[in-house]
Amino acid sequence: MDRKLYKSSIYNYCTKSQSGYLIYNTLYNSMVRLSETEYQQYTGNQEADAALIEELVRQGLWVECGLDERKRYLACAKAYTRYMPRPLDVTVTTTLKCNARCDYCYEKGVVQSEMAEGSEEKIIEFIKRKAVRNFVHINWFGGEPLLNTSLMDKISQRLKEENIRFSSYIITNGSKVDKELLEEKLEFWKVTDMQITLDGTKHYYERRKNYYNKEEGDFYRILHNIKLLAEKKIFINIRLNIENDNKEEIYKLLEELEFIFAEDENVVFYPAFITGSCSPMSEEEKVECVRKMLEILHNPRKLTAGTKFYSFPRVHPCMNSDPLAFSVDVNGNVYTCEHHVGRPEYAIGTLDTDIKKDTRGEVQEIRPECKECVFFPKCFGGCESNYRAGDAPCMIEKYVIQAYMKFL
Image 1 (cartoon, one colour):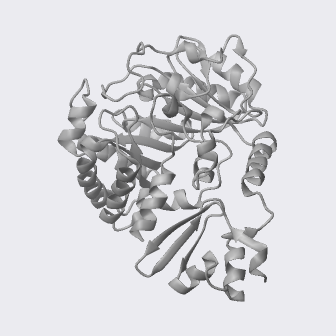
Image 2 (cartoon, rainbow, N blue to C red):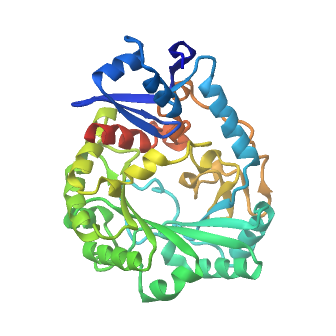
């Protein structure tokens, strides 16, 4: 193979290690470790031998000189969004009420109200219009969604009556898990995954969550609930909310979580940097924070490292630009993003009037600096809501990948 026919992929991320160099490709999900000599061949400073050339091309780290990777990737993403059969994704805000009072909640200022009686029929009709493949994935959202389980029951029952296949995911604080939910509701709602947020160890967590009912929000009660859910084979993402002020708390929390959940393969820890924080972190601080978290864990894959490395390249950053994803709030307003529920000025329509022309599958405005970023396949422009709020739009993959390679 002739070296002159190939160039380095624009999606190669390289870092130097004690034993040489690590190169990871964010588009093709491939990684190699190169010696100093091999790295000099990779960069073109030395003549590359045939075996190395063949391996670099096979891994996608070198591509044909005439290939415009970015153009091809964007074309594939557009085709996937338009033509690939996928389920409808609907986030249902069962209530805007919550039994906790987190100071960082992005729903601060939104009126805490519940879904109006009879709204389940409008939601079902909306799903029937949009679910062209007769499958829908429901994200139960709030407030605290488990404060209105009767709505979850009604919608699940109606989906079954209409023979619409569905699965569901719950974003919850974990405080309302009880015997009925464990023994009956999870199966009835077809729950496969749940996200439960923790902010630190016991005293920090309970102070920051500020539950109305202190007993209900007891830290160890929440951990016990997670353990019970894991035993029911529900996949649990423990979301770790991080900012500069609580990162030391998160390190201590992680030690405790690993001790408790080390043997639970379906419990993982998901680092998330708080948006709108009064103590924001720089890019370098975020990477270093995740690296320290990886060092704490005996099994770094518990920090979702594997899923971040081997995920498919994104074809849109999040539901905000996915033409098959919608959020519905308690007032029957329809949104492109769950961050906007309860704020009708951001609605694209209602359950009664349907929605305005949805161009998300046709127009994808991506900031130039994002297109040029080596992590673009893991992010695809990032969270628009965070960007508008003045926060970094980047997805967590950007920090996990850099931190993991430093860790290696």
